[in-house]
Structures are given as structure tokens and as C-alpha cells.
Amino acid sequence: MSTYKKVEGQVRIVFLGCGVIAGKHAKRLNGFAGVDLYFASRAESKAKEYADKYKGKGFFSSYTAALQSPDVDVVFICTPPDSHLELSVAAMTAGKHVICEKPSFFYSTDFDTIDKLRQEKGVQLFVAENYFYKPALKKLREVLATNPIGDLKFMFFNATKTQPVTDWRADAGTAGGGALFEGGVHWINFISNLGLTVQSVTGFQPSNTGKPERSMQVVAKYAEGPIGTLLYSWEVNALFKGLRNSRVFGSKGSIKFESNGLYIFVRGPKWKLIFPGIADIGGAKGMLTDFIHALKTGEDAAFNLQMARRDVELIEQAYQTSVI
Image (tube, rainbow, N blue to C red; front, side, top):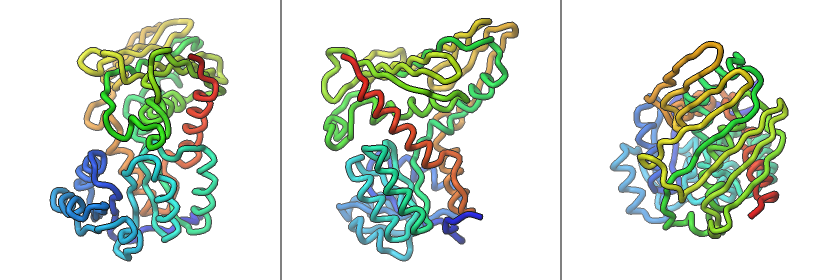
């Protein structure tokens, strides 16, 4: 039997931080029945603006007021990463469930604090890792489970793009790291949920990538045998600003897939072209659906706290072993 408090009736969610990502999540959640939205910002005018724009039930002029409000069940943290742990602890201490934007916390050991509070207060914390819910990842995992290309040997993941960095992401103290930590965490999650077990990772940085880094190569050793290579970059000119191909190589063929999830092409003893679907290509709707279900039932979400911690541990390992 679950030890988590269930949210009865309407799920009342307050956003801490009124930026682009909060707006995207709020727009999606507007399509969910049984969800009420509130907004909090250090600038009251901003909170009111978002409440008006995204059909909110109310707004707060400070994060503290939002956390203390009896009208709130869930706190959705959409602030820069350096505030995530402090705000999560404050929200859980106040008896609120938490959805925390990625990257979650600076250190994997921070999850010890969160897990302790989770048990003491009976509340949940979810990390908003939408890549776990991507239709392409689910379909690729299903395909690999059928062993269509023989023994797996190599896996190559192309996640290169051009992304200007002009905000808090340019400050390692605020962001917690460079490109791999802030955005590459999505792909660390992706390569860790293919039905294979990542045994270890090693990081490699181009010599002219800058600080914090804008590009990183991560080589993963899987317990089942294959070697995976992830290229993650914010400074590579990709076709159409992000159209890229990734590959999986086996002893009897290969799998080619568009990195965003447009298609999967299996070339083995039998050929197959698969279109996972583009309606929720990034997985965000599926993620929020799962979180709302978990809040109402008191059950863990499919992407749980242990998985989120593992992602941070792998990034720590990549940085610790990085070679320039």
C-alpha cells in the first residue's frame, strides 16, 4: 500500500517561476480535466500576467506565499537549477507534492535529502524528464527487445544542434554545469532507458568548447556488451536546426532513427519502417498525464526518483572522467 498522500478532487498546481518553460507546461495542463493552475513570481505583475494568459485560478506575489497557501497541492518548480533543491525542500516541508524541472539537483547526493522528506511527509517529487516518455524511445525499446539485428555492437546518438546561450545557462554557478548537465541530461536519460544497463560512462570535451562546456562526447559501456556514443552540442550546425540521424549497429543489421523521433528504420533479416508518432513527439503530454495519475493514486510515476538520481550520477561520472 502506498505511503504517499493522494490528491483528492481537483489537482491544484502552482508554478514557481513564470518563464518560457512554465508557459509551455501551463498550456498543456490547460487541456487536462480536474487541474487548476496558479502562478507565483517574485514580480506580482508577472504572476498575474501568466494567470490571465493561462486561465489560472489565482496568483501569488512571492514563492513563500504560494508554498504556505492551503489552496495548493502541488508545486511545479520552473526556476533556474541553483534554486531547485532549496525550493523543493521548502515545498515538501510544507506538505506539498513537487514537480521539479530538469536538471533536478546539482548533486546525486541531494536525492538523499529529498527521499528522506518524501518518507517523512508522505509527498512525492517528480523530475520533469519528458524524454523518458517520448514515443520514439518506447518504440525503440520495444524493437530492441525483439533482437532484430543480432548481437548489439555499437550505438551512436547524434544530439548536436546550435543553441545560443545568453541567459542563466551561461553561468555554471546558476546552471550547475554546461550543455551536458542542462540539456544533455535528456539524452543521458534516453540512452539509459533502451532496455540495456549503462555500466559506466566516460566524457570527452573538444578543446575549444569554452566554460561551461557547450559540447561533450559521452561514451557508455553497457553491461550487456555494446558501446554507446553520445554527441551532445549547442554549437554544431545541424540540418534544419535539429534534423539528425542516430544508429544502432548489430551483427545482422542496423537500426537508423531520426534523433527527434520522426522515424525508425530497421535493416536486418527483415526490414521495417516505423513512425512512432508526432502528436506528443517530445513526450511532455505523456509525462504530465503520468504525474497527474500518480498524484491521484498515490503511486510512483513510471519515471521515478531512483531513475532521476541515476541520470545525475551518470553526468557526474562523465564530468569526473572528462578528457579535453
